[in-house]
Image (cartoon, rainbow, N blue to C red):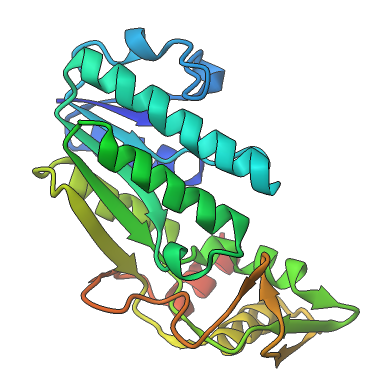
Length: 250
């Protein structure tokens, strides 16, 4: 089966291409570096020839509110048009658990807009909503730092490893379209500040982590269940402790 991974050279896309290729499929990594631009449409028609499935794991180059919104809307529209023309039978997109619950977070709002375009495109689809990646915890800590203190919102956190995200996307891509959404999350759920503190301790970072109800998560207010699945979710196999140990061993 030919499966085109849009954003196939990134954190998730590269892992997904490897998994699909090992399973015997023709997995194509499509990105601007390979001459495929999902925003302008450049190279899309040629890349999608004979493709049965397209998996969109693109990431916006800018998180400025208007720029990130324009990116995801334009990309989803171009992909939808190209997929209809090519006869693609399944569009899979990676989105975020709780995106609709934090409208002040510009990135989350843009992902909601992307989902709306996908739903209206006319291509059978499955949207995979993931919790925050374990690989991003360090960046979250940096963004939330005030002096030597890391201020984290008062909510629960359930991060998932990039390897588990890729594995779930591969499973979905090889299945039938749901014309709906699937939530995926890591196996460990704990207060947001506790997980960030575990990460910093593991890398011997001396910063102090505190829970601050007024702390913003990239502009959004964190409530108790803002960032975790509310119902059924597919749970990854890699726990935070295992991921931390493996990451530091590499």
